[in-house]
Length: 387
Image (tube, rainbow, N blue to C red; front, side):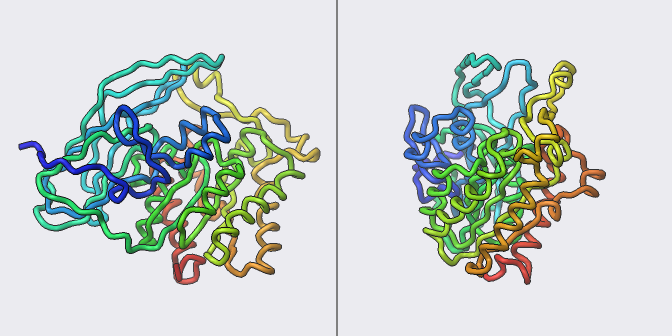
């Protein structure tokens, strides 16, 4: 029998969202507030922040059936193989118990000349049955790669919002932090690290948009947080956005703004993971056209290593700069810490687990990075140990 008790989808049921917008299809979780979106109407940013990475419904219930109606929007590129449908993950008392993709929704198809085609479809439903008939914590993690309008939630027993009794970890990073190309929303590396660390995740991983934007820093400044981390580097390199002269002050300014709102919380600065194509070669990065011709998504770097001496950024340059910045700030800020991204994913790891598209780690590598980050940050000697 289908779940029949309707429960209004309200803010107290939703975790990991910064703002909720009422739309024609339901309630749309955002990971940047409206004022920030207004300051930068970049399509890549607006797509990324509306994809609910780390966002989940969290409630206690004895229900054995849970249904969610949702309207998805997926974005694809003309000539680029589409991503597989993303899962909705159902976790019971912290354990992943079921996964399901949704059907229908809208597709936005982009081409590289700026053209946009939109194909509209119906709202879909995910249904989970056979849950244990006892009081339990249910978390329904939303897709990290699909803009998701929440329409209606139904169960076969009453529910109540889960208590907010864990420290809040606020994290910002690139598409790797958002989830690319993890197996599912609850198995991205930040989600796995949060589970191991026993904390409440707010994931501001923004695909293609970890660019030291002031509005992102101000958003982080204003959000409640007990622990804060910032992973910086890959997007600045593959967009060829700035030079070494601008990078240092921009990082200082970003961290200064966070400290305005969180003056004493543990603040962890994480440098880039290994990405061979950008270690010594600056951006820009782009799709590998030959690989696309063979039906494969792969990226390549187009910059000239000779231009590093003129100030262009590579991942090696960024690691050097970040280590120096954190060391300088630590003289007056004992709660700031540095984590070398190569300890999360380095050369030996690349030999065993190469990046499938030359840029993003796969599902197994997300699990590796999540374990290593949790051990480094939440372990007995880690900066988040007392969080």
